[in-house]
Length: 126
Image 1 (cartoon, helix red, strand yellow):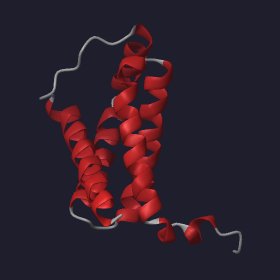
Image 2 (image 1 turned 135 degrees about the vertical axis):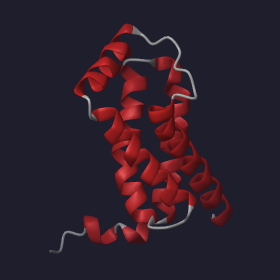
Image 3 (image 1 turned 90 degrees about the vertical axis):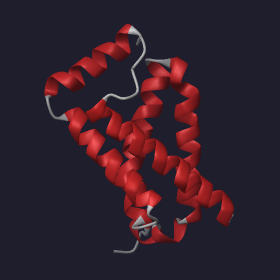
Image 4 (image 1 turned 180 degrees about the vertical axis):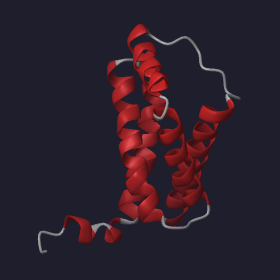
């Protein structure tokens, strides 16, 4: 499990860091989007804060994973982003669904590998 965890941590850390940086630097061109996805991304851009906020969380979470620091925190802050990536590709842009499923699998592996860190969060005892 150690090697699987290491690979998952590095792959997810790299993808989050790279795609987070891309939101600021645009070094990976975005292809054509279906209209529904383009409308959602347009709304995010029009807000003026969503893309920078998402990008910062992706970069911070990715760097934490790559440096093997505060893994529990990294997973907790990245989970909502990955769930939204999955939902966007599931309902609005199915062409990217495979990549979203890989990210879900990677974070799932990491949550399982670090499950003991999350027991206090889900304990029924106060």
